[in-house]
Image (cartoon, rainbow, N blue to C red):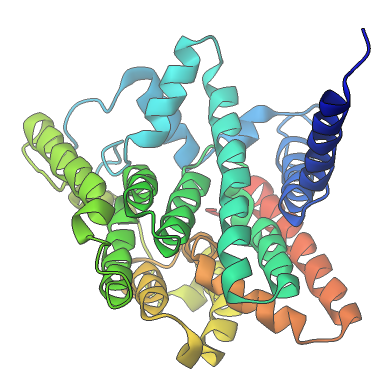
Length: 362
């Protein structure tokens, strides 16, 4: 059976779209960063080299999320003892669903994290194209994918879900789709305890946007997340007697402040990673939207006093930092740009080895 002219045109269009998608900065950055981090974690960091070890991709917090997906949160926490209660339910909930459909827990967690990374990079690309040049937007995507702190985007962590939800919330709000933005924010809020900072930053963005479009209402943007938070706190209160147990139970973990960080190499590594991304943003602080400044400040500053381990992850999850870094890279010589991305890839490898071989906390 021969194709009609219309069918050939449609097929040609579909092929062209697929080709553009596969050669876009989003897909290329995603596939390259997945290859690097997966090899580092599963092969170079394997417990049984040279045989790949998927369990290296589900370590640290990943163990807690897997336990929650498997057996639930368990009994109320005891003072000074680690428990599952500091962790939020979206990631283990999706993991449990995929397991019910036949997937092993470890594989489900890795699939969720890496699929969400692709969605997150698409969101970074989408919002970056409206705020910076195409070249800077391309580098923002590559920086998000290759930055050492992005290692957890490959692991059994909800970090990529958090970034995907937050960046798409802001992108959709800018496109005057407040309800869709609210649903995206819900993903970030249900993924991690500090997701509430997204709501504060989005509220600022709504107040600014209402000057141009009064039809955008705050309830559409923050309503879904607030409903979840109230419901989740009620569940926690019922099961543990503490609606904010995710905060109180976290006190069982040993944390290092910014003052203590120099004496702890794993903490210092996170501070250095965060500083690398913060500097370009601060240099362009007058050009940043107020909501972005709020987002960065609330995401990073509290960690200086509450615990800097994880700061490298939190920084790369702040999409405004990647956009500013993309602009900074665009401003240098092309050979220096290549060097920057090479160094980031090397840093991703090094951080992966520190996590797997030297027991650094990601």
